[in-house]
Length: 107
Image (tube, rainbow, N blue to C red):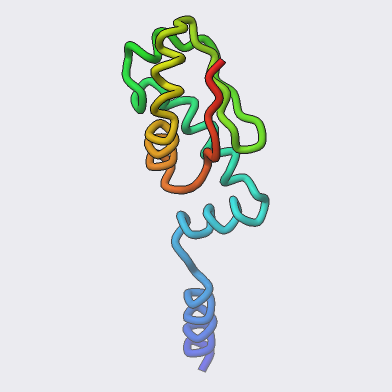
């Protein structure tokens, strides 16, 4: 009898088991960290997203209220990126798979 009871307890515990990825996602949502994580991911992968020539002329990247502020060293590049701002926002959001960036401001 005792063996069966332990087996039932083990089965009950297994029903509560979920993949670690799902647990981490739930934790991120509970503590509202997903947005910050997306922001950090965008800043870290800026060169991969925009390319090496743009990354070399980028001086600083920072977020405030879902706006990405990009300080550039080249005025012509700033003008060119302002003209294609919607494409830049689309590329950045595609990288993180969500709406992490609502606007981009080129400084």
